[in-house]
Image (cartoon, rainbow over all chains, first blue to last red; front, side, top):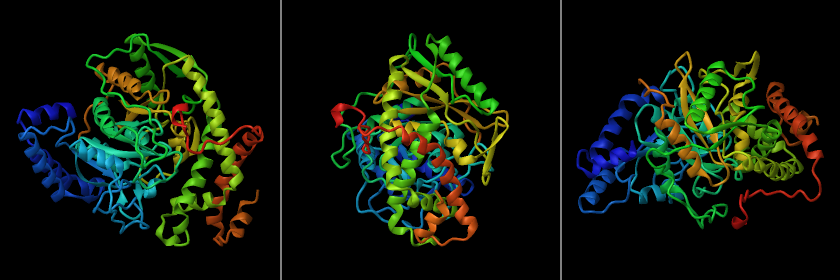
Length: 459
Length: 57
């Protein structure tokens, strides 16, 4: 979609001003229903679009994102534009610098039309923001879009922008991507700079794109990936071209199918759709083989312990102003301030040991296929979900299959793979070894090219 | 661990239902986490910056 639009821009079949104008009109029409934007930067976007058109006309071509409307989760610092983190703590925060990701997207010619609503401080999965209003799922406005990057997924599903940036500390890109039927890519830890993004968990935060197609996610990753001296955890490993070639094949690829944990207590529609995607991969020549995962509940416990402590450390200076926080976030921050230092350090020790155990999986398979979430999007306000005859806390259930991957730092992508009987999207999670984003994008593109996907959202 | 006492020791003087929102999840998490930590050996070091490859160390 981005590549086709880029061709249209270069052939003068459409202008960036026309694209941005149509985007703003759609925001005006839909945002009151979706609650997806906190700030719309229409004038600035139109000014940039005029410059983009002028550049193209004079032969300055910044690549496939040149002149393309995008949006940013309101966690990415934007010079001169308020960056709230969906929080009252930052409601008047106007940065005097751009996050590295924002700089890189601007250098690639992308045009941001605004800042997106999200779960408060990125600390939750519903995006029912108590200060800026709930984000609603375009597939069914009574349902949550997931979170924390709920606005990012909602504007993709509603066909408002071509790409939206999200962040993922315990599933916050992949969950909303699954619930809203978009592609969501969490790159390897260190692949995309964290500089200028308000942290939630320093050692768990990942930045990545949400898009309507796999190749759009690859185009976005091409623009944002790479070393950054402003982020000490950014990898020095060279980037590659992440865009899968047309007609890419997965013949001979070894797909791991987890025998344990990932298929426990699933919504039957989710299980059916994910198994269907696995069968499709097999029909395309992939070798699907069963694998036994190391201890995922233990990994999830480690990830939760790390996040509790790191998030409360981030928010520490504001914690005495309790009225600034919504009740769910405040409860988590209170929990984190009580975690003993010994538990935090032991969690980081366990994490390293577990990563060695999980790394051994890559000797036997090239990727793993799992559901992204065990459930489809819950209704706004639901606090529990019933799965396999068990009532689970909706946050713990929804993060069950994604949270541990943040502790491992592996790249993972959520690909729409079906709709439930009630018409809500379902996501397939494709997990790969560190820095193998190109591989998981190729696998996802092959599936997408061969019929795995969902129809456009009717909104 | 009595998380309610710990909370109060940290100056969190909250109504009982709010203390439950803190203590119950922490108790559940500790039940899973603490036995794992028992298995750690002194040479198991933390990696809080999560360097995934040797070249990035």
